[in-house]
Length: 401
Image 1 (cartoon, helix red, strand yellow):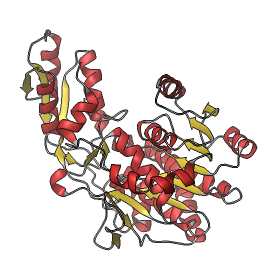
Image 2: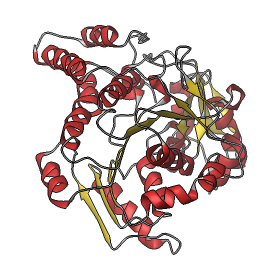
Image 3: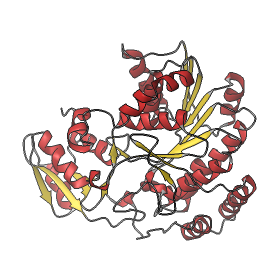
Image 4: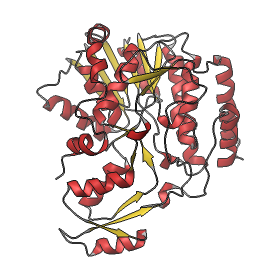
């Protein structure tokens, strides 16, 4: 079995230590002051980034930790992981709740068990794959935008010392609805940033995160199924550990309205194809390049242990896929000096809450009209987000292996 953390360090991030280690060390006293003994609520804490944030923040010994996620199995595994690690501090007041932060029961929990000093929200649709049709897009916008705003309204009467909401690199010059929804989410939280201490972070692909292409390789191997990989897409990458650390640093150190991102040079981007080739080299198994997904599936039927493994490399042709990613645009004012490993966007647009409410009402009215399609939603998003240039090919990732 391949050592995934070592593979990430050696072949993907090519870092022996965390990108953010120096900034954590330099700010250790401040982080301890802001976290030690405090009450923490993490929404979406069972996912890769949310659970990594929890592990990062537990090093500074909060006094209370409540974790909410719709993934009941994920919460169970999170608890097993935390409880089974002799080096992990778990506060005495630790509870997990399988529920949505948009449910009425969540509000009951929040009001009865608070106040919370630190609140972090990782509950989001994160996959470009989730963009298929009007139903999938409505669900995405409901989770990433509508519920996020409703939660901010709740926080206005119960203000935490720090509130963090995760974003994505795909929010910079978005070309897919997921990125546009997170860009709109950023605009929502910025409308509240004068009243709440609130920050966010855009960061790279998290290597081998839950549901990611790379994590899928392990499952395909278990099921003796072929590997399918885009040949022309390259991405920035951070490790799961680093994903939690950047969120902790942004949450605890940022000024309200700041958008954090990792300082990664363009040459640090990696092609999925190269990672795939390295993955099989590290596994000491040759690959058999196939010319179609059908050929790869047929080859997999007769592949035995030790045989070259069928892999299909293809050129991207699905909606919303950008060949590269970026963290900021030409119009952003960026602080590259305060932190060793982090840049900070300082001039995010701050609309009024009334303006944001009108945009959300327009979206809700469209979706409630019964006479809308994907194009209508995209057009309305473009009105609110001038830098949104949607890539539409008529093909979804769900039509791929």
